[in-house]
Image (tube, rainbow, N blue to C red; front, side):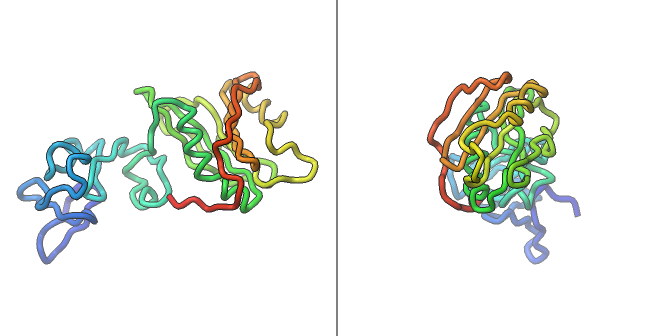
Length: 218
């Protein structure tokens, strides 16, 4: 039986379950009001008007970019074929959000994590899923931008290692930015959130990240 993305059919009632409420296909609406009120939209009973580009897997509000496939953790993992990543108005915020989620885990495992910062055709920015690398190596381009433009890479440096300047961009890092003509973002074990231009010139360094072993809950 055909149903809208994110819905589970309830044979006993003939309704579709969306975790927080039920949808009636005969009426074309939910049978109860949105639990989050107007935050989910002005119509408290409505499923997204365009279910091809938007879905409502939780019965709360519409999720955009249904086909991008770049959102992969938590509830996103369950609906990854349909929904997309969280987007931001600038690349710095997208990179900071991504690094906040992985810097603690990177320190725990003493492994680098890396991904890309992408720009869609509406000039919104988002991060691809972080790839787990090695102790002093990672591959951001293994997590490509889906149908969008590569703006920057982001990566972490794991925990402190003897003989390594882990709170700074390495020569290898800068070489990647120059070769691919992209900006670079770095999360360090000292909690620094850093940005460099395409030539390797550092643009800022801010104390924004965790400095302890911590696994982020998506």
